[in-house]
Length: 490
Image 1 (tube, helix red, strand yellow):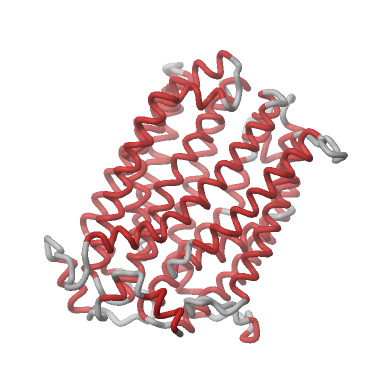
Image 2 (cartoon, rainbow, N blue to C red; image 1 turned 45 degrees about the vertical axis):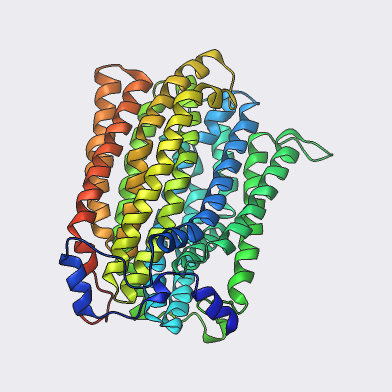
């Protein structure tokens, strides 16, 4: 109990009393929100940083492992690099339903933690794992059965299709374990525990990199499997993470909020499943829209040729690393906003949303400078082909330009998800990803023949418009009205 109290005192939210629905409505309509008594700006930032830094370490190391994958595979030639890149979107498409439901799990666990309802938080964990297992098992079968058609659909040519299909098939063997780990991570983040996920993902990434070295090139007596070796290394790391994640929720947790109580069973609970899907279903639509739009976008780029796609893949991989700061701070905004609304403290929800966005903007500005001045040197870490380095250096300027936009967008979207307002995010994604990125990319690449530059202009336009729409939605404060199933109306 002492440990629990010590942990709780770390948050500013724990220093304020429970609010009421009427107070929540007052803070929704009030223009300015002062700091509550006993709460200071430094406390808000400390809460943000406490959750964000382990998430940042976890997400960054995960992306770095992906970068190392590509760097090691890239030494085999840009054909191998393209083969691996072609599998990225099919994998995300297959797990999009799990990703979406995890959004619902995070928001619900955060809300129940704020409300002090531990049993309901644990029920969400069990029901989320049940849904994830069922869905990911189906996706595994589909992924193995249709691996070759999927990479052919992505634009794989004769020189890449065999390696790409083999890589995707091997990745499918760990899809269930990977998905269950992601669900555990999502629920841990809901209670504000990002350190546990950081620990098991760090171990998984180290395992991944070690086996990359052993299996891609065949060192220390291991077979030289090349592209397939990178896939085997990835799934070995994923199984290691799953084992550690499962252990983390099986033991009694010091924060007292998440414990996988197996003795209570995994019988479907209609109310909890509906609550998860209430938030997760719009997010599922968003994920499907995102994947369809990005796949069309990727196919548009793949049609430019293997060299162009390899360059595009390198720059996308670097850009994904830049996502990590925004995504890490978004973990904070999702958890803290959700917990604040569960405690009926709309003022704290708004303060957390505003301060996390400000923090993210500063971090994005630093990244913008880094990518603008050192973009070409970063591209050379992947591949030293003169044409890849030349074009990649210019594309990195697009990456630099979009940093402030994507940082704010991620964080405010995280706040909306923490409130359960996933429907608006789905609508915004439909407008920007399908209506702007894909259409504009097709126009600039196919009609105006601007090549990779046209595709990246379209992506930058998508980021700018999406940021504007998310900011407008957040500023409306309608997200503060969202109610869980069975929750009393304001």
